[in-house]
Image 1 (cartoon, rainbow, N blue to C red):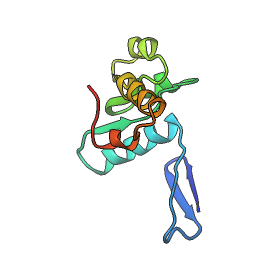
Image 2: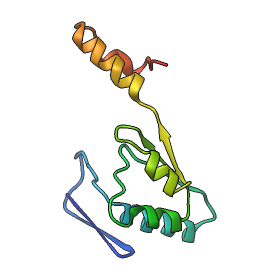
Image 3: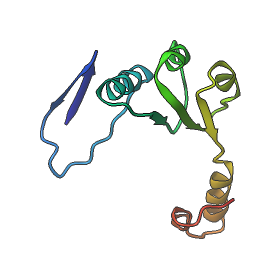
Image 4: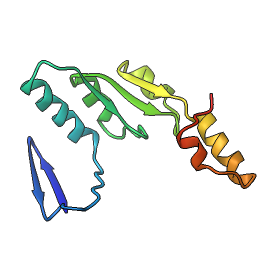
Amino acid sequence: MLLFTKNASTVLVGDVKDKIAILVDTCGTIVRAADRLVEASDTKVYAILTQGIFSGPAISHINNACFEAVVVTNTIPQDGHMRECLKIQCIDVSMMFAAAVRRTHNSESASYLFSNVPY
């Protein structure tokens, strides 16, 4: 399965029935998608990303986009990005990673963390 996004159109090529789809995207694509959502309806748009690398003009794009917020984790430092863009919010995942490492080291179940989030 291939998903092509260029400008404002999206084209799906291939059979996706009973398949797992993994989408890898860029800031430009989510900005265009957010713009389309707002054009189609009067709604608020949030982006939730695992890592906020924000390379090149990404910060500028987000500042000019219609996002209410762009939420990322602190798997890489976000302080500089947050100073440049007030829409960026960061979730601290250090306790989750620490618990996963500790549980793995002690031969305990890491899958326990799927339903029991450490604080």
